[in-house]
Amino acid sequence: MMKYFYNFLRVLTGALFIFSGAVKLNDPSGFAIKLDEYFDVFADDVATVQDSVKFTIYNHDGVSNSATYTLYTFDNEKNISASVSGDSASGFAVRWQYGNEMYLESEVELDSNTILQKAELVLLKENGDKQLLTANFEIDTIKTKNWTVQLNTYIKEQSALNGFFKSCKDYSLYFSVLFCALEVILGFALVLGWQINWVLLITALLIGFFTFLTFYSAYFNKVTDCGCFGDFLKLKPWDSFKKDVVLSVIILFLILFRKKSVCLIRENKADGLMVLFSIGTLFFGVYCYQYLPVWDFLPYKVGNDIKYVMENIPDGERASDSIEIKFVMQKGGDSVKVDIKGYSQAVKDGFKFIRQDRKLIIEGYKSPIHDFAIYDQESGTDLKDEMLNFGGYQLMYIAPFLNTMDTGSLRDMIDLYHTSQNKKWAFYALSSSSLDPAKQFQEKHRLPFEFYAADQKMLMTMARYNPTLYLFKGSTVIKKWSGNNLPSVEEISAIK
Image (cartoon, rainbow, N blue to C red; front, top):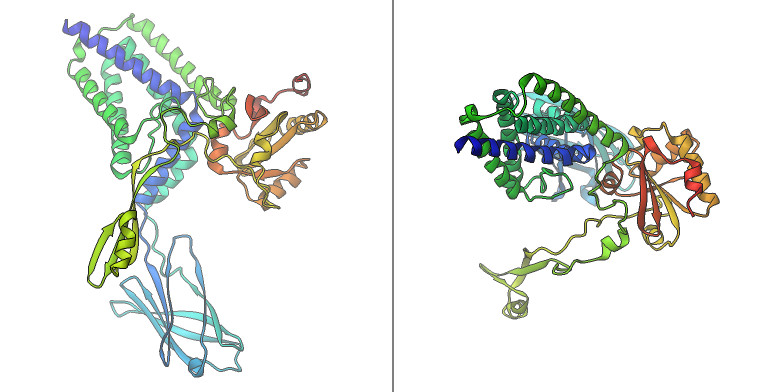
């Protein structure tokens, strides 16, 4: 009985791995985006904390100006400007405070006839060492002082781990295909019962890694959707963690009683089958990246009316969040927290408003399409409503990143653009690039159309390959093509 239960559980676990890996491998670009989120989170969490620089001007009457500037690792300099007026304009002191360790102070005498003068500022460290820093002071007739201070001395170097996680983003797509393919292959191996010792060991390491990720996401609320089942099924972080804990227990059981495993076919035949299946799995992932997902679970899938998806609120869902608002009020040494009804009475009693606390009670419905927008960068015009309310056919050419776009099909796209214009179709080319790079790209490739701006996340959701072409009828998606498989002019011309 135990033997049958063990092998049933092994096959069931393998089937779950195949399903989970396949829905992600079907959309490797989507899982790569999720990996990018994790890499960004890890890079931020291991980043070296940078101090701020406090800048203060003292004139003869006391403090004239004070401000704190946060330092970032990409800073090289800070541009500071301050005005000194009145009789005290003839001289003042400048002080820089760096975190809790470094202080910089200098007396500066101004000459109204001097347009540019230099002052040598001395940096005093806690250990008594001195470091010289030269700042340029530019003074005009109204005693406005502008200067630039080089910050290279103050910036702390980032940790090696920070650079490692940031560099991992360059390989997210490769990791996506390999991880998802590995999950499918391990699942198939479990179903067959092939090389059970090695397969269970690798599976345990993989599920242990995913359990750590889901716990990290849930506990620190870092990544709100782990991407375990791609866009097919969205799980909240704690639900994902609980799922992985259950799987970890199952894998542990399978390891402890692995001698009861039975291979479904002969080992020599299983070896050849595993090789063929592994090659086919990797090919499937590459194909889905090059030619778009075979099973489309995205909100911009063929058949969806995106205007309806944006505006429709399913039955039983709230249109907006339910928020509890409390007001913190203070009078002397006393403070109270009241709701909206008690606010007026608290004011009458002499309490003053300090802050507002908001607590989410019930989350409202959030449409899967909530960031759709199209902007003309030169005029600032929002073209979203024009597109959504257009009744005829529309082509939408989407290239999220122009600097990494596959330009091999641009000549074909130009022909399709001219064909669409002859048919009086609307045409939109969208990118997240700013105006100047978009113009340069247009001129370099002699494109007869301009790129409009749209949200980067929206474009990455719509275009799983860079670029992707959409055909709309009104606001309904009729068809979409990868840039590797654009339709012919004849195909577009035949559409009536």
